[in-house]
Length: 107
Image (cartoon, rainbow, N blue to C red; front, side, top):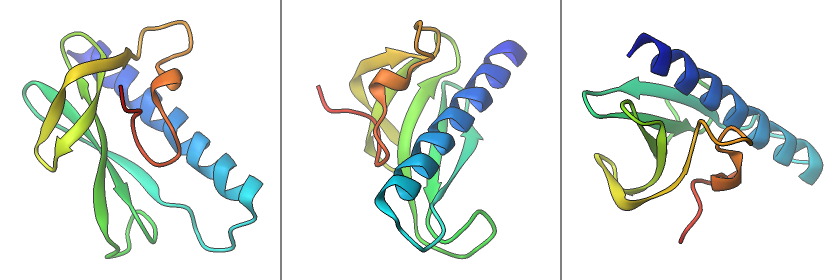
């Protein structure tokens, strides 16, 4: 599990970079949302926080990652992933083909 936690944290960092690059390319002047990770028994939840990591901004689920397999899932709601995996953090691209600046891709 420790190995998966490190991999998931690195994935969250790649997602954060994707969001930051998107904000820069679009010329947005406000601070981009931050991605934080909350680990559960089966899934790690990637949480998108508007207004900075320590601000009391709005939160939404960016996506879920299975802590057993590294599979990436779109969020069905705040506490559960959708049924089908969209990619894996262990793919050649580190799972980034499953990501957009706004969340995990639809099927």
